[in-house]
Each structure stands twice: as C-alpha cells, then as structure tokens.
Image (cartoon, rainbow, N blue to C red; front, side, top):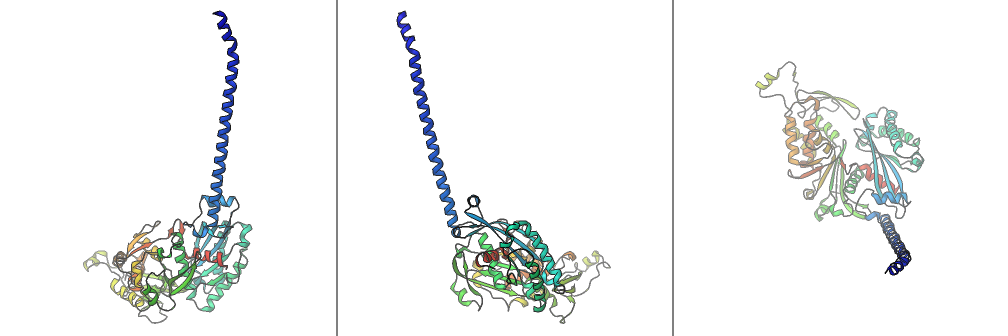
Length: 472
C-alpha cells in the first residue's frame, strides 16, 4: 500500500512535465494560428483597401459625389492624387469676389474633386472706377493678397488665375472698360500666379449662365444624369441668365436663335437652353424703371416705385442720382395722426410699379413653357432679396412660390421705409421677371440658395473647372 503510493508519487513530476510541454506546444500552435489569421486578414484588408483606392482614382468622372472623401485623402498621402489650385475673380457690377479653389486631382485619369473653397469680396465693383482705373486695379490686388494665403507660395507659378468681368463692365463704354482691364492685367503680371493675356477678360453672358448651371448641378451631384439637372436662374446687377437642359422637343424647336448650345460636361455632350439678358439685371432694370418717362440725362429720378417720403442718393455706373417718389411729402411737418385721418401714410404704387416692370419685360424675354414643369433653383439677387425680407432662412435658403413673392412685394410697397428705399421696386421687378418675363406660373415652387454643401453657388466654380481642363 505505501509502496504503491510512493511509486505513484515518483512518476507524477514526469507526467506533469510531459503535460506542461504539450500545453505549451498547443498554446504556441494556437498563437501561430492567430498570427497567421491576423496576417492574412491584414493582407486581405489592405488588398481591398488598395483596390478600393485604385478604383476611386480611376473612376473620378463617374464618382457620384462632388467633393473629396476619406479615400481621396488617403490617396493624396499615398501619392495617387495631388493638390491643384485655381483662383477666380468675379468682377461683378456691384462688387468683386475672389474664390480660391483647392482640388484633388487623380494622377491616373486627371479627374478632379473639390476639396476646399476660400471666398472673400470687396465693394464697389470695377465699373465704379471708370474714371480711376488704377484704384479699381488696387481693389483686385487686395483680393489677390487674400488668395495668396490659401495657395502655397511654391505653387503660385502653376496656379491659374483668371478675372472675368460681368455686366458691369459690359455696360461701360468700351474705352473705359479696356483701361480698367489693362490696369488689372498689370496687377496680375506681378502676382506670381500663372497668367496669360487671356487671364483678364469680359465674360460672355452665355458663359456666365452655363458656368452657374454647372456649379449648381455639380454641387447637387446631378451632372451624371443630365435629365435630372435643375434649371438655374441667376440674377446679377447688370444681367440675368436662364439655363436648363430641355426635355421637350418643342423647347428645342421653339427656342430663338442663339438660345440652344451644345456643351461638354463630365465627358459627355448635351444640348442646353441658355441665354443672358444684358440690361435686365436688378441694378440695370432699377435704372430703367426709375428713368421711365424722364428726360434723358435727368439726375433727379421720380418714380411710383419709390415712397413719396423718400429722398435718397443712388450711384449707378459712376453717375450720382437723386431718387424720389412721384411727389414730395414732408413727413416732419405732418404728424402721423394727420396721415391716418387722410387714409394712411404715403405708399409706393405697387400696381404702377408692376406695370412699368412688365413693360420692360414682356417683349424682351422668351418664355420657355417647359420651365413650369422643371425643378428651378434661383441664386444671387433672387436669394438676397428674399432673405432681406425674411421669406427664407438667411443661411439655409428655402422654397417659395411666385405668388408669395408678389404678395410680399405688394406688402412692402404699402409700408414706408426710408431705410429700404428700393425694396418695393426690387421685389416687384423680381416677381415680374419670374412670372411675366420667364412665364413661371404663380404656384411654381422656386428654390433659393446661396450655398450648397457649404460651397458658394457662384459661376466661379464652373469657370475654375473649365480652366483646369481647357487652360486659361
């Protein structure tokens, strides 16, 4: 009995050692198995990631999204993409704006995605410096100095720089416009950016409309399916543009000469209805309506669109005017209580203002019937004036019907507000342009936006794309 116990005790350490070795061997095998699994999983994950990155860099033109993503940033770090920059100056009639764009460009197919945008503006516009071109050019230099902060200095020499002037300079006498442009060219040549003799120019109104349409639909990710693109309405100070892709054969056949254009976008050619109406921008139309029935060259402009309580100075195209209502009212001598006895305070004449607006529009603007069946997005002064009067959110924009715009115009005309002397005229003209000009029904819904996905709804982005792919 005792011997047996001793014998068992004698062999126990050997058995324990054997078991310990087996356990260690098993543990090591399991560890190697885990390492192998991790290794193959990592290899597969990296292979999938690399394949995804490669696909992302070879299908840029068919990518459904306009801006960069995490894969693009990884591609940049791997040397599969590069940063490229373009600086565009929008020399508008009421102010100049600089937009410096940062893109990612694929080294495989040269396609680009928008990464960042810098925006700054200055007033007044170049056309205000008709008698002092050097001062106008200096305002452009101030904008360029801001753009230089965005673009790395070692890349200035390969960053395209363009200035495109719009209706403000188109409406100036040719000689004065050219003097301004020559001064701006001198500033450009000293800027350090990539420039050519074509860097500074007056942009064709059709290009302005097409670039705006491109910007809007690019930011909405609609360009890959032209039939899904929205119609773009742009209202500047000197001109207004309408652009959309026709779906109806009747639109193509009924459009006046010069309204249908074949354009290339994202490697496909499409027919686009686009026209720019010079002289029908908000400031230009304001001048024509205020001058209706007045002697040519008259500097004191009286209009039913202006409240009789108003006497205001206004400068347009370098000329200073005094703007008044059709008759004078000295509100300081007549208490408000007296006006209430007479039936109310003085008002601007909405009906007469609408008549003047219609007479300016009805014989000069083509009405494409198809527009009423399309999704319509309006920018620039359409957005600004709706925002000014609280019709839409000042940051997000909104949706309005033409009827709502008319209603607001009539309300504004009925309220004396010397601080917004042109509010009645501007809102009445905008409503008339949309309805009596372009023929939109009063129940048509209009989208109004200043930004999409955080980017400006400016024609400058469309121009930047054009420059990147076609040169200055």
